Image (spheres, rainbow, N blue to C red):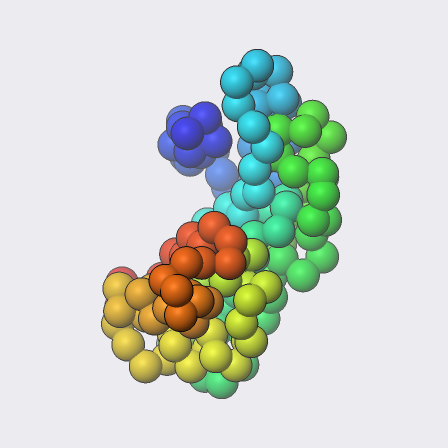
Length: 159
């Protein structure tokens, strides 16, 4: 919750990827100093017109999906150390969005346990809410359990 509140408080200042890096570094230090808070991954993306920029640290990802392909905007990030370790390394990213593309933010509970092809297919065939449900079902075991925490945010040009 501390990380979410930090983004809310600083949202108006997120004018470029470097500002996003600074925010993640600030969050890292604040969470590290908190005696109760634990470590977390964080992928932060800002859509401003046709520009997408942000920063990430940990094992979550931000993908720009267009047609049958995708660009992993977080491909250069460091998996560890996580936000809250006091030593996280936030990696900036920037891209131009295509008017027909979708932006996917997801934890490794999705990205690590299914293929990019299945993720793209699920995103193409439904409205964002239904696609979000389909994405989670891609990694659900027959028992109903999930292999890891799964969080998905999908933004489409119409959403």
